[in-house]
Amino acid sequence: MCQPVNLPPVGQSEPNGQAAIFAEELLQILNHGAIALMISIGHRTGLFDTMARIPPSDSQGIAESAGLNERYVREWLGAMVTAAIVIYDADSGCYTLPPAHAGLLTRDASPDNVAVFAQYIPLLGQVEEEVIDCFYNGGGVPYERYTRFHEVMAEDSGQTVVSALFEHILPLIDGHLSRLERGIDVLDVGCGRGQALLQLARAFPKSRFTGYDFSQEAIEWARKEADRQGLNNLLFEVKDVATLDEQGAYDWIVTFDAIHDQKSPDMVLSAIHGALREDGIYLMQDIKGSSHLHNNLEHPIGPLLYTLSTMHCMTVSLAQDGAGLGTVWGRELALKMLNEAGFNDVIVKELDHDFQNYFYIIRKMSGQVGDSLN
Image (cartoon, rainbow, N blue to C red):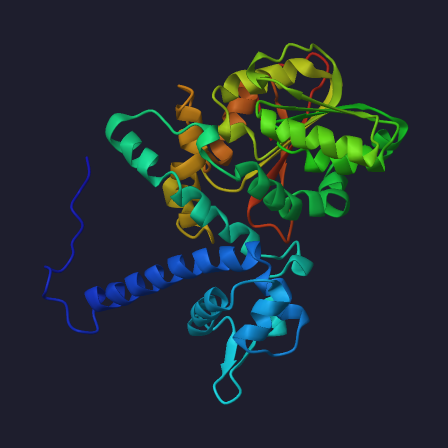
């Protein structure tokens, strides 16, 4: 039974007490929310990239260099200056994006470009009305209501997964590079636009790669890109992976930030278990966090993760009458579900530079029975 928290009565805290501190924090939250939107605009319009490559300039010069309307650029610069992201010299009327800031806000800064992630704020804001309706009536918001979702996810994945694929992620699996070089069958479940598979197919021409996703839009984009690159060892198909029935077809199966969005994650994990060959490997990259809220209090992006869950990951699953695991389904539940799917040889690894993700290295051993986990 919940117990009341002992707090001072409203209006009785001293001026520099709890209420005053919280009021100041709330103002900063409003400012930061507004700036997140402006950062997204700066990324999408190329303004950060433009300012990083030109000398200090006035608003007209910046607008001309970026091919944009000066009045809008000037107002955007006002937001950037008051947020201390851009420096303004009143005497000359010139604006400067400091190199240290450009190193976290430009496309050249990838994989450290934080502006990519700022795009989620306006993206999620588009479905606020639908999500509020779900608070009253239940259900969820379907994928098709999220414009640009796969475009933003592809940029996100390009920074968090694809950029680390060869140097950091593949070396987590002992001997795996040599297997890919010799030639194996690989499946990416929930591949989206297939950014990871496109890189892998190009790097390992002797291996055969398949990507499944239920988004027609994402698969069409991936197919066109594979054709453009002339990759003939790569296949993309629209498929509900919960119905996957390809017994022992693959040596390596991957899911990148995909399981917690699924309508039936238990069925997907069981299907993956069945599709793996004996001694095959399943790599599941998913959000780093605990299944228990109290363990996530110090998570560096905890508020963002629970917001992403409420506004996207949980609701798109519930829209299909699904499990609605949410973004922060957590390590404890993930291990339990892997065990129930038949996997018991699981090692969870982390990368020193990556505070967002766990990497579950899962081997399907001969005669494996799901009864224990590492």
